[in-house]
Image 1: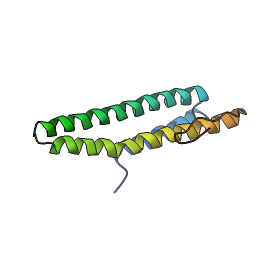
Image 2: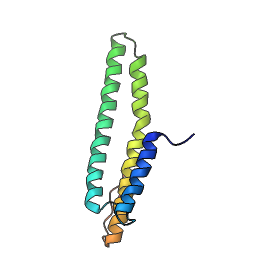
Image 3: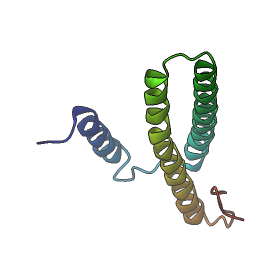
Image 4: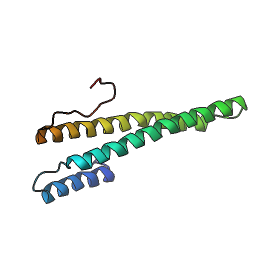
Length: 115
């Protein structure tokens, strides 16, 4: 079984970008910082939506309503959250590499670090 079509398409995009950039597929620091802001926004939104879903489940329970579908959605949302965090960390790593290549000494703040 091959890779899912969406992943294969992403792989091809990476190869194409590498060719167009003379073999250098890394985005510049400004682009990576923009991606970090977007990832932070997405992560913040995901956490907010999870809390909204938890509140909805509480209201459904209080009204003695069925919560099965709402709980399944919450479970799905919670299972996706680590992917948002991993994506953000990958961006932080790319920023650190780009900064090192530019000779900058500052590091991107990672969750749970005291940098």
